[in-house]
Image 1 (tube, protein in one colour):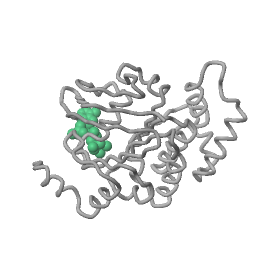
Image 2 (cartoon, rainbow, N blue to C red; image 1 turned 90 degrees about the vertical axis):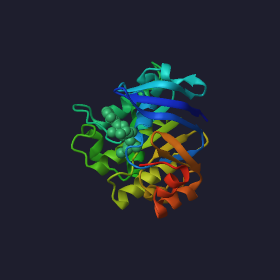
Image 3 (cartoon, rainbow, N blue to C red; image 1 turned 135 degrees about the vertical axis):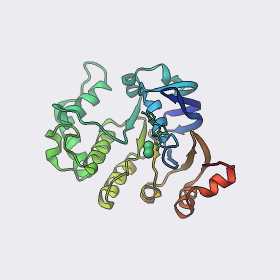
Image 4 (tube, rainbow, N blue to C red; image 1 turned 120 degrees about the vertical axis):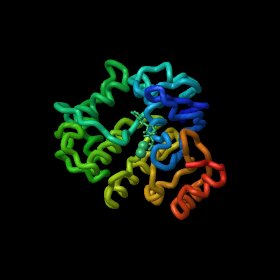
Length: 252
Ligand code: ADP
Ligand code: MG
Ligand code: MG
């Protein structure tokens, strides 16, 4: 499996420092959850790893298997094995879900080694069945008019089709009803193997009732301030974040 190492990461948005030294290492086979109050920089972390141009890394490093991710263009990051599910996935007009998936898969493969059409269709059909996605979605324009739940299911469809080495899922649970949450979790759990590492960003403990992380991290004010096992998420659910603030002497 791959290893993603985030070291002393400092990130600014429009001159304002949002991440103030994040350290996190995720190995293949591991599921990590990052939790934390709103506005503490969780999405900023995801965007910085994927190379969003608005997010300027001013200090620190991001390495994937020792390779400098910060030196890579966005498409090179995907080719290196990184996958990002966005908190707010965008619509792509004129491109069907099926075409988008097929060209995404092929962009990760060598030229001349494109996935055979029948193999692609079979895999897409099976994966859509598994995620209880209506078959019509394949021919709809990506995310156009999709409900919140459909967008999230579609993100997991992409994840399962692309089989990246390392995924960052940002609030994949937000706005889902319980049935959609179960399906999305089922898909993420299906990905579990030694070759796959995953960073699950979530505001709520609820998702972690269905996906058991190996490690749980709490982010506050632009840093990872506490790490533990699944029991840490349970304590946060029961007691909120105030005890951590008190423990660390953090003011609001
Ligand atoms: P979280 O995901 O933990 O809720 P974010 O990473 O979205 O937090 O935001 C962290 C901080 O950065 C917040 O104060 C937010 O207002 C600010 N921020 C996030 N994105 C932008 C942006 N595109 N432009 C300006 N400020 C931003
Ligand atoms: Mg938020
Ligand atoms: Mg966020």
